[in-house]
Length: 450
Image 1 (cartoon, rainbow, N blue to C red):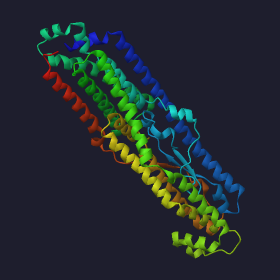
Image 2 (spheres, rainbow, N blue to C red):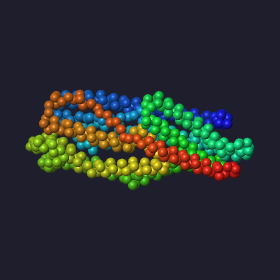
Image 3 (cartoon, helix red, strand yellow):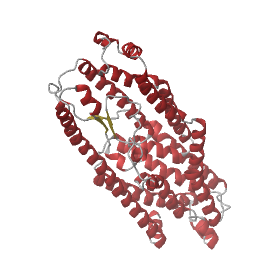
Image 4 (tube, helix red, strand yellow):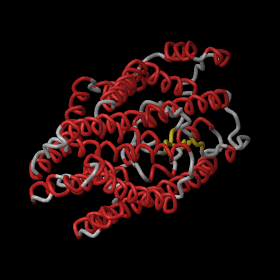
């Protein structure tokens, strides 16, 4: 019976067109992902070469003052981009994957982003996660909305009911055939992704695939439940499209608006203003209070004393440090609210399958807000290590030529945050079972009403 149902289903021209369209969209998404990964790799190679050349040039042009060299010198930290990010670009097109910082005030540099066309950012990327979350449900709806109701409307369902020994099993087979076809297309695209994007067959990839399969099961469960309501085909289509609009457009937009109002970010501007004020106003103040606050932050540098010259690098970098110290509270509040937004998004995701899928795909691909916050934390630690290394050399006027500038290579941040497989896979599985179970109960209750 399954073989006959499969042949009957796959012969439909509409089915062939739908599968061909989605396969083509999937291929386009993989090519976009490949371009994204190539661009990230090219940027990493460029920054490695640029840092080496820039450090040599600054050391050559300013051979007498290491403080002046380090005023200009930039040191790069790269947020490693896994191949899986080619499937779910997430926020990587907005947040920079490379931070180039000097040892001056960090808060003025931490949130620098690349210049992008805002129209392109508004439209977003047609990556694989977009195809999966937005287009796959439409194909599932097109395949299933009239799977049973059309037979009833054409008057052939009574004949099927009379001839079938297990009518409920026959209904299940109708949906299993469609599920097998859609999952086959999904697995083919994921297999091509492994080849095109060079994705390793590791834990994150299999969790990514499991999340994708779970999301497809959620939509089949929804369609199975709607079919069990015994409504006409037109009503089923309208109801399913309405569910699609609510889950993918209305609820995410409402949640985003809630978070913008519940967790506003005035600290973003306040941090910048406070940092600049904390630094610039020190030019018009006596040196002693600034240096005293600096030594309170770094007591290990007290032996350098308070220089009595009109200008000295110790005082200058102490001013820079004070800009960061005086904006520390606003910076901490900003990070806390970003974390709260991330936590609230994941909490809502437990109730909204589409949101959960998007967040988890981004998390597995290391392209979400969580990864960006961890990268910013590593940037802070990286900047602090640079300061602690160079401050003693600046304050003692260490010879520029004696410094091994070639040792200061580009550093890479690898996000090793733990992945909870149950948290990733369990919600879509539960939603799929819930709606599938409700549909099964409806069919059993009204089996002979059909």
